[in-house]
Amino acid sequence: MSKTSSNRTPPGWPAEVLYLTTPVYSSRLNVDETNFIQSRNDGPGPSLALSRSMVPAPSPPLARPRRVDVPPDHPALGQYGLFASDHLAPGRIVIEYLGFVHSRRDADPLSDYDLSLDRERGIGIDAARMGNEARFINDYRGVRDGPNVEFVDLLVRDERRIGVRVLPVGKCGKGKKGIGKGEELLVNYGKGFWQSRSLEVAAKVSQVDDD
Image 1: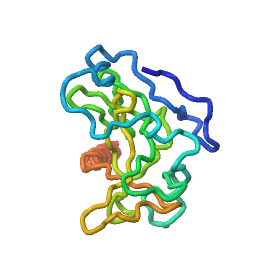
Image 2: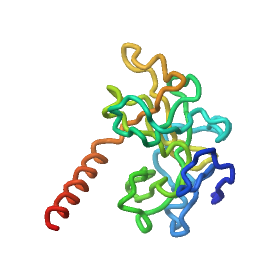
Image 3: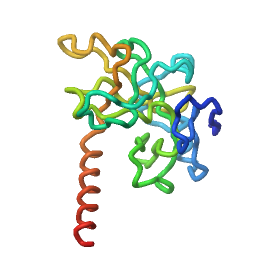
């Protein structure tokens, strides 16, 4: 498994985040976890098996991060979001979600950028300190009625990854237009994320009250 990153850091990239074009793997992954990532274990595989040529290369990107400046009530106003560089058709794989691939042994419980690659084994991909453009995807809540992209399992050169896919066309033709150029990519973080956030906020408020 590759452990390299890239020196081709995009302009304006946050200095505190290492830019990646390939995943970085924890040295603490054991044999079972490594075999799972390399798809050597029995069991159902990811939903999408792709050749490397089918996964978008880092340059030119299909989506670029920039600071959110509209609408004024955007929950992430002034922070980064990810926006389509061109029209993105329904079902299109936009980008891989890259980061630090780890087990439970070196997971960061405070990270807001950690996606689960396998819950049973506790394997995740954390983009808090290192990652690519996909780390800037915001939640759809407070921006639009629903998400326009989703996280999906990928199998790239026999290696399990996570990708970002434009939602396919739904019932009654919903989503048939895909994502327009300049439109923000928005995903569903899930109720678990927001429940965890609520508990964190409540704990901070309680600490302030105690002080």
